[in-house]
Amino acid sequence: MKKILILGASSPTGKVLLTYLQSSKKNLDITCFVRSPEKLSSFSNLNIIKGDLASQPSLSSVMKDKDMVITLLNADNLVTLAENVVKSMKENNIKRIIWMTGMGIHHEVPGKIKEILDKLVESQPHYVQAADTIMNSGLDYTLLRGAHLTDGDNRKYYIQKEGEALHSNTCDKIAIAEFIGTIIDNMELYKNESIGVTN
Image 1 (cartoon, rainbow, N blue to C red):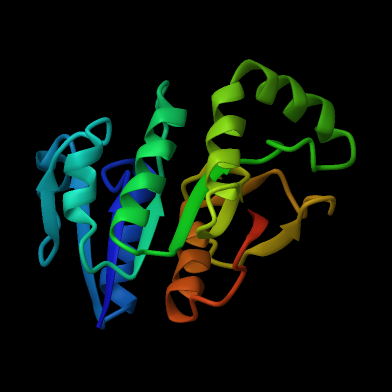
Image 2 (tube, rainbow, N blue to C red; image 1 turned 90 degrees about the vertical axis):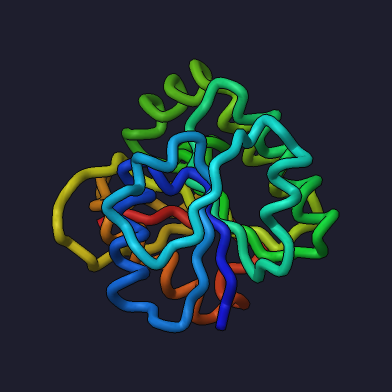
């Protein structure tokens, strides 16, 4: 049984991911580390631990014996959180992480949308710094660069590596969940790669 820690599980994307994993992945032990456990009250059969990611010792304590960490975070102190995640994983000898971030963080998207994404990245440099913290950590990472996230039931996704044109500008959250599920099934997939995901 694979043991997965999800950070950001109470976010809209996190809830879609939890629903997907519980319905399609039967051999998982899922732990969620959240500030507000009541936001996950509709879920059962989860290990829900209350805590603050800004407390590195607390984060480290919930990582024991985990096989993978999945992060779906959005915060002003994202760089500090990335540093805490890296330190905690190393303390617990965990190597595999999926770090969700935004499209365009490395000015990697060609075409007309590049100018828009470049301006967005310039206004939120902490996304870049946090992603680079993960990339330079020595961990086995996958940077999941999500397109504009939408609600819907389109599970079909397309993969774009850095420098490749986007198939579209949007992605349903369920498609993000499907992509993450493929890596949970085979943790060697997309190791040490930056992957864009769109519908």
